[in-house]
Image 1 (cartoon, rainbow, N blue to C red):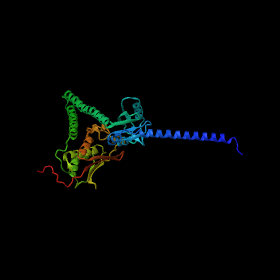
Image 2 (tube, rainbow, N blue to C red):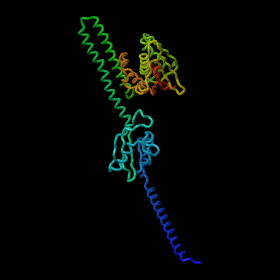
Image 3 (cartoon, rainbow, N blue to C red):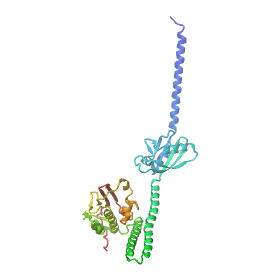
Image 4 (cartoon, rainbow, N blue to C red):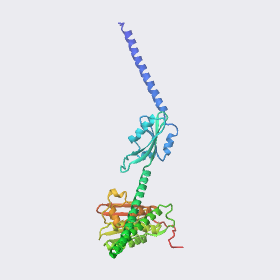
Length: 384
């Protein structure tokens, strides 16, 4: 039997279903419009290529601070990781740039993620890129600040180091004059005056030597250098002091090793290592000097002592100018604080490096590593 309610019920259902379909269609259209709008906003042409060629750190972030593109250096320095800006200080600078009509910049001190012993000093610039993005460029000034600190320390240290013996010479000269009637006092002050003048002379010579090593072309006349001869020369220069303290110096290897360079400079470098080993070794101990050629064509000259060793905190600074592990002992033994700095520069000028192994209570080993001389014809000093 036909019910009068079927027609209005069918009409109502049709209206509801139709309205639902209309809503779904409108939502789908809106989503598509938004998706097209988002897809239409892309990085300006050329930005990605520029970042790919940058040697410095650079990256682009979107409104959510997600990194859309980053240079290799931005990732290597730890500014960007997993498409995110790592440091909150940089994020804050980005937010400032969004609110400004001009680029903003600031020098930031940023913590390293792996090497926490030294913070990064970065000059960071941020600027809006279109209406959506922000581009960030960062210059690493860490090394510049480190060198500036070294320069300031060098000037301060050299002033102090020169002032001490010069002041001592003046005081001893006055004391010598006032004690002219006392022969014993005259001899005592004369010996002290000689000691201070020798120390001043060594310090001046080391400064001159270090300046020469830092010149543009320190190896003006390279020649074939016999490694064993260099070692023997260094040993002879330290033999008297070593024997006076009962220290035995043992030399092994290096008879058939040779390098190309300046024999006198290399002799100074090895001498400085041996002299340090003698100064910091206990009486009656042994110093070992070994030389060998590795399978990779590297000549290694190792100087090992049985001293107190060097702490881990001091190892990073041991090759700095005027740096002393034990300042009082260095001055007592006549050390200038430039010996290891000279060694480092000599080795670097010869295309090599120097390595340190040390353990407190077990002594230290300094190893000079230099390229072995090739079979090419190299002039030997003294030949015509």
